[in-house]
Length: 108
Image (tube, helix red, strand yellow):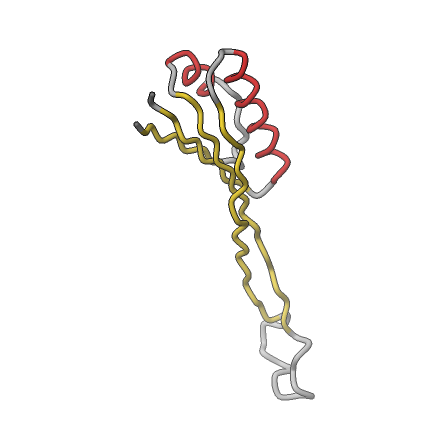
């Protein structure tokens, strides 16, 4: 039987979990097997930035306190759903926020 691997990525883990539970409930109502959601490791993107634009403080007293670190976390979830026409049609009708990216890959 064909399966559809659904990959969800986003910055807000609660939104991802809500969409995953909605997909899982829909597939179970239609009688299709579902495995997941499987949480994948969170990617942490860090950018160190100087607080002052002129560069002052680098030569005074070590200059250790003039850096700020910005961080963005990207969360991922994976669902495997039986590839049924009705299920895939219903999944495409789900309202997905713009902050969440979804990829659907069909496999044998």
